Image (cartoon, rainbow, N blue to C red; front, side, top):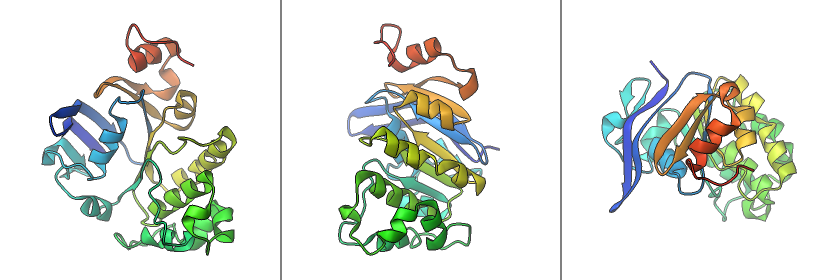
Length: 239
């Protein structure tokens, strides 16, 4: 039994259908990367997995339980935490207060405390009393990751964590992921940087127009296959 899986998952915004029969599975301790161009349906998939978008109950299963119709707080309480696109920090709260928000929905003993988050991202301890929005974009992303980890999740969902950040900042953020994986958490990363996605993941799913177009072990996927799955047969050149 997979840790987290979807079965023929569909999702819509009103009359616009964004996902068409998506099937994926995440195993214990695994890191999955979801790649695809803008509009491929990646964020909609993450919103569905986290409970922000409601679905048919059996379309999403977590440890065998149908969770597709649960609310986001209920999904988080079961051990699935989200690092949303755009970070979504609370501007009226300090860095430390934003981190502590992560414990409100799920008070579970585990490896992640304020001290361990500060050990992972030392700059956050230095800036702990500062307003979260006074930090740089990369530091704010660290807060968003730390906030999700404070719930000690079994599954960490990361939506476009490198978006808009300088390469050196992205490198520093991804340098924390081996430590996160060591705690046993499974991770799903949505990432437009294909090289980065292949580097950090065990398996990769490629999406285009709301469908899975390719899946496999990161080490087995070749450039041509990814190109076709990412852009279609008549797509542009892959950077």
